[in-house]
Amino acid sequence: QAIAIEADSADAAAIQAAVDTTLQQYGRLDVVVVNAGVLRLGTIEAYSLADLDATLAVNVRGVFLAIQAAVKQMAEGGRVITIGSNTAVRTGHAGSSVYAMSKAAVASMVQNLALDLAPRRITINNIQPGPIATDMTAGIAEQIVGSIPLQRMGEPDEIASLAAWLAGESSGYMTGASLTIDGGFVL
Image: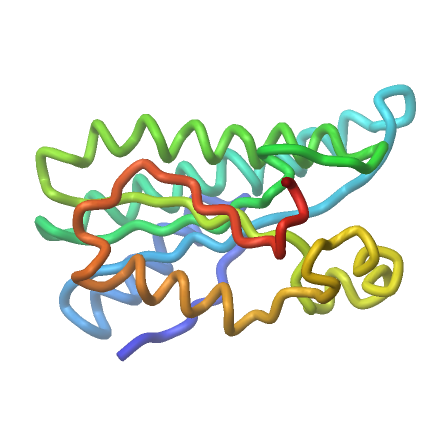
């Protein structure tokens, strides 16, 4: 069973409320998928301080706060999964440096939090999707497809399937990893 809870990832109280709601509903927390992100593009000369603060508040601080709130309540053997981005590895688009930096921070955080969580046998892994057919990419899909070696956008179900595998028993020996799933985009 699962529930989806909407919470503002930049709001620490909203994040804690989401964890509390889960505990009230189920009595425990076994798996958390942190799927937060904002995309604000702009070159270094034009990027505003407000956009920088908003990106870091959601993409880095919010991810940290969600993990922190969840693992405080998580039993031994739990699973933490973050949704990052293949831009943490490489980006080929001008104006995406702040977004890429924020997603690289998530990948680094996951790698290092694995050490903190290992004594409790809690695994933490990061999925790094490339272009996925979602509302975020709807207006630019045609421009992107040609640069993807598999010549198609990824599907949300493909990311969900990887998250489900990471949440399951067969991934129990994997922790601190970032798994890029992008049709070969960053090769």
